[in-house]
Length: 579
Ligand SMILES: Cc1cc2nc3c(=O)[nH]c(=O)nc-3n(C[C@H](O)[C@H](O)[C@H](O)COP(=O)(O)OP(=O)(O)OC[C@H]3O[C@@H](n4cnc5c(N)ncnc54)[C@H](O)[C@@H]3O)c2cc1C
Image 1 (cartoon, rainbow, N blue to C red):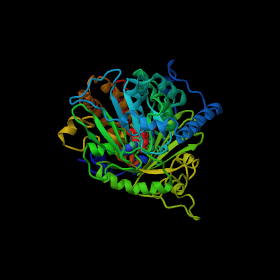
Image 2: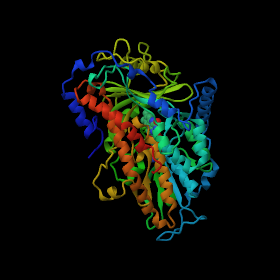
Image 3: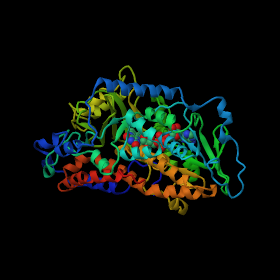
Image 4: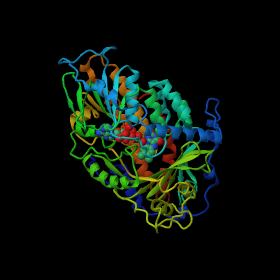
């Protein structure tokens, strides 16, 4: 059972880590020059896949595209700030969800003229996609979002092939707009590099900055007949969904759902907002992120389990002062909410910078000791990067002073030093600093990363049978399955959830069938998302300290080979049109 804050995860990863630490290291395995083939960004087998006639053709970076992508981002961010499309003012008093329905005991038939009504808690990716899916299938939807403005953490996100297919099925217009606004990342190499150390003679020698694993995301997508992965700015995604997903006025901001009450017998649910406003509908969806209040009520978790703390992903507006407070608050919330502290704090930024490897590499991870550095093309000559450093939860950076005006930058320059080395004397590949130095102190946001247990953290029979749903209420997105960002699948799985929720609810012909439909949604989704959650968690735990592994005889090469072999299979599992 996984309860609350843990600095270490349980399970196979913890076992493997303890083996790594106990087994003898052999420096000899790491001595010598790295092999030339591990320094090549674009190997022949990936070149061949990218050269296929139906593969997207990479157009080299150019000013026109940079201006277009950055301009689109700025416009979307401004629109989001102006709350365009959000319900404010007079219309609000006439909203359909304000009036209690006079539904008889036992429920009512669902018809085209009297469709199913759905309240969505949370206007993040999961909430917006769910509302779009339900609206496209004729349901009436409303979204309650607690935030007063939209301030994303973590820059653009990869909308991978599987999520693109879900969006395409929900709305061809949304799909086309997203692809047009996005930057294809499937047209280049992705992979894992060793960040600073040498190893391993038995597996072919590696030096800092050398590739351990290279893969392409295009081949598995083409095999499954899916579109190529793109990266899109979060505010752009939000604006496209708000504009094309449902009627104007569907999102109500400054609206925090505090509790709900089942009306029973097919009569739906009553949600209560923090100002006492009531909302009525046939269905309530909790798409309210990792610290979900709906989840807290649904699973009867302890007081304090639902919180305002920013989730692993979007969350509310964040400045440094707020971030410091949230880091502490989150430790307390996590302890009540059955969430797992991943063991990592994450510094993230989007650097305006044309990366030195941009034409060949779209996504790479530099692996190190107690930390790793992830970067991805953010489009428009911007690199999005995350520095994940293992340390206890709740840590904060000092406030800037005259002597130390850039504490976050200073720390990161020390952690990833490519000259004198970090505190352990490890000298890093210069690519990490190339990106860190292109960011300003203000660009860098810090947050501890939490996720959830891939298997249910309970033995309750009701939750085992229907893990994310009960009666008229269901969870989706991070509220249901928060995961580490390694696989870039948290948002993609939220998108699949939204699609599946819409599909299951569209089969409902009588409101008495809602509970069964939500239970079915939950059962269809839970196994797949648990596996992906597990992969992401295990990946994070195994990848860190990979250098250590590389200097253990036999075990190092074994793990490296397993990682190399498993990547295409993991991608094949992720990229499926069945969700
Ligand atoms: C560093 C990083 C990189 C990532 N990269 C990727 C990637 O490349 N691809 C990918 O697919 N995923 C990625 N993810 C994961 C992805 O961001 C999340 O899985 C996804 O955003 C989850 O969306 P959500 O809507 O479930 O939750 P959130 O984005 O957390 O949204 C929840 C919303 O609900 C609102 N809310 C909360 N409580 C209430 C309440 N009681 N009432 C009303 N509103 C409420 C919040 O204000 C928020 O707007 C990444 C995550 C991180 C941390």
